Length: 393
Ligand code: ADP
Ligand code: 3PG
Ligand code: MG
Image 1: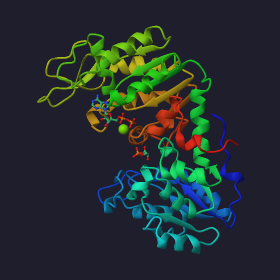
Image 2: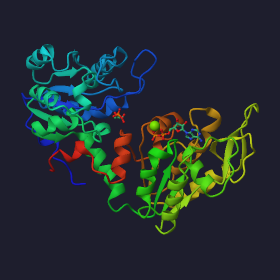
Image 3: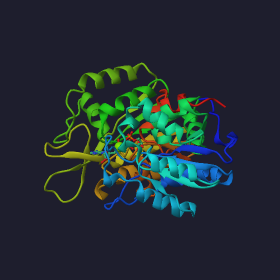
Image 4: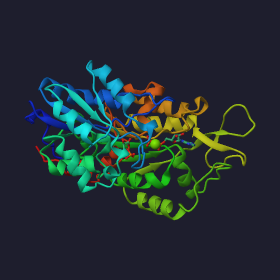
């Protein structure tokens, strides 16, 4: 994708600049920020704006409050963390586009920040309501898009506002587009894709998009179950979503003629109700009371060898139920063995980045996207409304 006009070229001094960030971060039990990576990744843009004398008004959502005020989804803990990271207080305007927000925005001085409360407290955000977008746009004079994780949403803050103001890409968006484009535009070959996780219905389009584009597609996690079943495996007590047979068969048929080899697990670590430990069984034939939880040692070896020969690797989704220490070894081993291999490796996904962090394998990747759905849509080659609306460089 062509580079977008960047914030580095924006005339921001003394100007009120609306900055869309994605501070939709995981929360702890008391609403505290449990993982601040998305905040930290926005700092290059925010530090630049401060140094350049902008008056920055930050916009974000948190969770899915559905157009209503939900005290558990306030951005207050986020501005608290952000203030600490910036070493400067960032006040929160809790009426979003009301008189307080207007007054606080007007009082900003060069190099200061203001954050608006969770945009999704207002029904106009997700509806991309023109009136709400116009009210937001009136708070600023320029717009900077740095919420890569949200560019797949056509909401007021991601599409409505940039249509109304001169708009620029922030440094995070620029970096995400540059890195992820290395997967979509002539990746170095062989290109191998490793996909796990749970929701087959959601991930079938992603998997389809790699047919004919990657040399190998390695499928693990619960995602592999319907494919194993379609190839005749008996999966014991493993829950396999019903009704997917036709789509999965069609996928496997298309794969045959696509030049992309689909590689499935040959052994699985299972849970057998009462039994205390985990057992490994051939994937073709699990005991009737066994429910599959992770890829087995033989599969780890096959996947690792396959990936070691690749020059480009994309990973999304755990290969087992990695939240449980008994079932994380498949993901941990395959990802950690990637580290020493040559080539370019990228990870993306809502849960995947955190899992890589927990397993201590972030070093296996040159780039870990801050995007969940946005990154998965990008690598499929889909048009993302929040990027399409920004002018090219
Ligand atoms: P991402 O958000 O990064 O795209 P997913 O949401 O698709 O990743 O995958 C994460 C979920 O997949 C985790 O909750 C994990 O427990 C689940 N998962 C992976 N493998 C299995 C499995 N074998 N059985 C049950 N759940 C699994
Ligand atoms: C994400 O975490 O993927 C983004 O912040 C978008 O959130 P959403 O899926 O609720 O639109
Ligand atoms: Mg997920």
